[in-house]
Length: 284
Image (cartoon, rainbow, N blue to C red):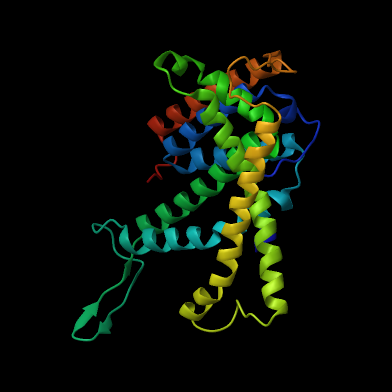
């Protein structure tokens, strides 16, 4: 399971998305997130799935890799779907399924409506597309260094309010860099504990939670040690924040960035139009 977590990983490549300016990627990703949460009917969600598939092809990242990154959130998706199925519905319509389950002196009547099933499907698609597309734009195709520069430049106006933009961007980048490292460290610690007879898969939930304690303690110790080593290394290299800092590569917009921005604006406008007309009359 730990090897399936691809959050924060960067896959070098030479695709169109890899070559985009990181600032343009951030802006396009934000517009796409707006489009995801504005989608309200079947046509919109079909467009989201199709666009996500096209972005995967453009990024030249394996579909298996993208789908593998969704495995750690499957429990969240399943839980969200179940909540929507049983707690959402249109009582004016006949239920698809209904039962009576006695619980002590009470009777629970779980009911599934067509509206609840539709909302569960739409919500699951929305979360999956959100994770896939934002990962493609922000981490899979963008190195942490360029991502830091993009965040710092986009938030540059906040410097007028004396907000430490550079420090904020640096903290976000270091956090992303530490995710794969901590995952690898956790895997090593768990393998070492298994070699000493630890059992993480069997037993009750409480027993498995207790078995994780010998993993968490050395993991926290290792994380603090790595943080201290990183701080010392940055001080040895005379790091003093963003003041007077120069960059080897200057960020520059190109024609592909403008085209991507215009296409995303058109896509978002199309989502609004389709939501208004709702051609198939199936919505949330």
